[in-house]
Length: 274
Image (cartoon, rainbow, N blue to C red; front, side, top):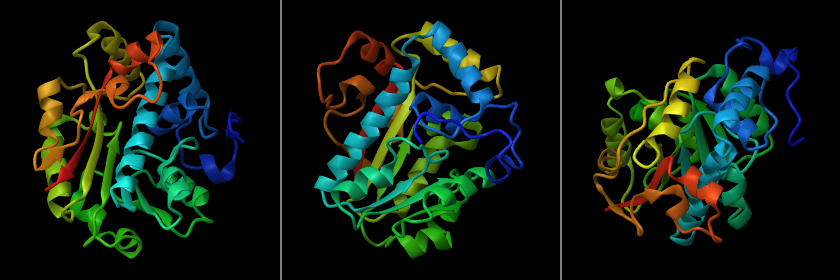
């Protein structure tokens, strides 16, 4: 039930979890109004909201961008998606958005946390065209070679590679630009990269609030400037309007001040593999 919370003594969902530590996926789910989060996640969200009242708009703008990008890809004939994120949100998830338009769409979610994988499997148990694979999102060969991926998708056909809100959790020591390049190289021509990334270009003091608040809770975010975000799209042709802030990518309605502030925290873009 949307807006409800998972009982923290639930054996099937909380077994093996450190309930004192928040997770990026559950924090995001809470901010989206979902149902899979615990008190630690709500505590961090409250700390963020106390200093940045528009923090929920940040989550929703990112989710709205992803939904619009998936719609764009559907219109261009793409019906297979790999969501290289962290966890499956209960609200606005990819398989529901895609399959609402085209019921034959197939979606693979990638998750390295076995507890999150178990939650994803529970959510997708009645959906034969969506699955979650247990793999390191930073290992393209392992993800694309996973039996769950190869059984669900035809990798010889175009794929929508979705990396919305996950890359800014990857440190430079893991070479995120190279990770994305290996994914793109492995995909068929006319595949698409959909990406969003935190930035401190527009409102550095607000970004620092987010970074420091999350760092104190064990979640590290690595914002990047515009020119570094553009590097992720090497090997693709950027779809207009290119790399812009989240509020600038084909907004569906006039953008209000809170959305403008929230959008300034994220660069987004879509690129087509040549």
